[in-house]
Image (cartoon, rainbow, N blue to C red; front, side):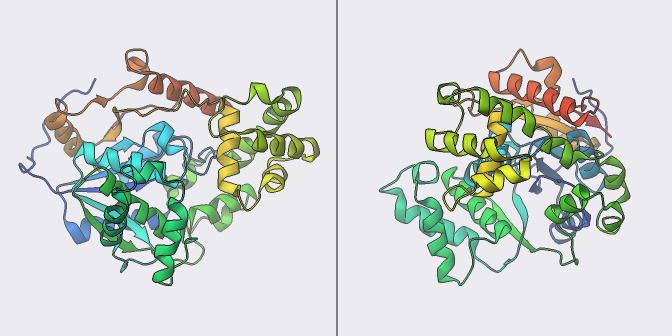
Length: 379
């Protein structure tokens, strides 16, 4: 339970609230610059980070514990950190965007700041045109249209933009999600900070190769000290467990798993028979239809034994950290928003989604050989 503290200041009746959706896997200088730049440009009353936890949208385990991500966000300018709903956080980009933007709507964000390769692109205008033109035929276009990705690619082609520009694509999905939710919000695209070699993907690759000396200039010292030793390889060591499940069971045991079909099962089974490592396995399974990120997510669903019935939405917002200003804001909205401030204490009082997340986090701590993460961090 959060104890109210007097921060010595007051928030306006209609505060300007900056929201940033992030994973911080790991937190680097580009992320620090984004928070600082957003506050410089918008001068908000409050800055909220909507954060992915111990697992990532690409189907991996984070190299930073959730608690350390929260600490870093607060240390570098955030006032409040809330979680992306677990089952949105580990799905494809459109579900990830929808869950994240829904949290932004519930928590009262007025300005959504995001990094992109092409900030001059009119995200909301294009999303609105696309949504309106298709809504008559597909009222739930964002969730139901199986050809959504190909249609987005066609939009990009008109502007000579590649759909493979991941941050740009994610930004457009944010705009589509806002349309789906009828969420009136100001989009603030920032040109991604151009620092040679800085990206979370690059940093994870260097970590896997134990080249810590090459990331010293890419991440704050707080990140460097918080990175779980050998984290990438610890996750990849789970391949032995998944391989044994695939070799010892038939499709009947896997048919209930989320986004898993018979064709994919046999591709997984054949790859398991000839693979000796996680990296070898996912590249053997990969096809034009099944991308690497899709395979990684399916691998994670098998590892965690996530079934179709388990994947459901949560209307609760998990509060992971705050400073005094963030705490004061929470006190003004607690009657309107279902806030979860301590997952361990409330886990059996709320829905199955929270219980699942609690147990998945315990599994994360076991694999990464870490102490359990604290949910709420008071600063």
